[in-house]
Image (cartoon, rainbow, N blue to C red; front, side):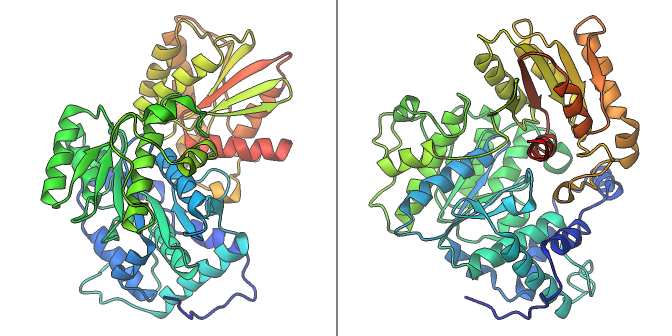
Length: 491
């Protein structure tokens, strides 16, 4: 289904699209109001997404043509989506275009919407962005049913990008798409998909409690909301017992099956494209998801057997080896500095990333530096998790706590503007100063600890180190994205 939407592109640029998109971000006050309301079950999110889709010319059932693979979880869903997309890319002769929708982005918002693993181009992003924008301006919704959808209003930031992704993948003729859930599942804007070819649930953990609940059971209930009647589903081994029980209950409610994929032995013999021993779990789940989807589309006779010693097709192995996913156990060499970068921001992911850093630097005699921020979650708790994994084997010579602001001018890179944190707290370095004090308490002394107002200043500080140094960057994908922008600018 290809739409002929009016174009008003003559004077529109990619920067115009990014500027318009940033106006859709919720500000910090709105975020806090939602948290304080305790309104965790908002079915209106789904109804509004269905209505926004109608207004740009689609029935929700039209999206079934995308043969969506829908992935949720607390930890590893982005990596699993990347592995899955890479596997499908090895069937390019039969699937010419594979879509991938993930969040958040690191350098550019275009990274969220990929075709054949490449971010959508600036020209196409701009073209499709304003097609959707203009169509929403030209249409309306009944206010008795949708009181928030007043004339001229638009979806919020993430909803708009989700809507845009559907439009782009439909217009570009993608015949299979991998969708990573934003938050939760049941009420996530990606969950308007009616008939995914397969659903996947990665590691469950405690995160986004103000939206999903405080217990593993509540979180599992939300994650299990992506399960659909007739759509097979897979999860990983060793889920929390209480959470797994809820997932099985949700599968029964939805009249579908939830199977556990094993850790495939063959994957232990290859070097996965994303580093970290724990990635074998995500890669194994990706094998099950991709094989089930290819089977549903008639491109494989049957899914890969759920047995540890199963034979994995060569295309799958090639896809897993060649997966590229920045900001996750990523190593960059810049002069005498080796940057070990991971956007981990939950208990489980911080512990996994810290174990990775400890392993890969175990034989290194270089000085050690920690660059950390987490602006919106319980940063002290995450620092505790990191310290417990690394101490006493890894001792940092210097620790730097920074904000996610990109430049020392106090500005963000255009694609990284954030209105979802307290501007006052960021400017006064409230979180960073508290982290520095907490770190000193953990180490029972005042060490070489710095607080910086932005990532560029942190970079300039660390650049002064003499001799080789190992720098561990962790705590936030927003920090990682800003750092990559600064590194690109400097090198």
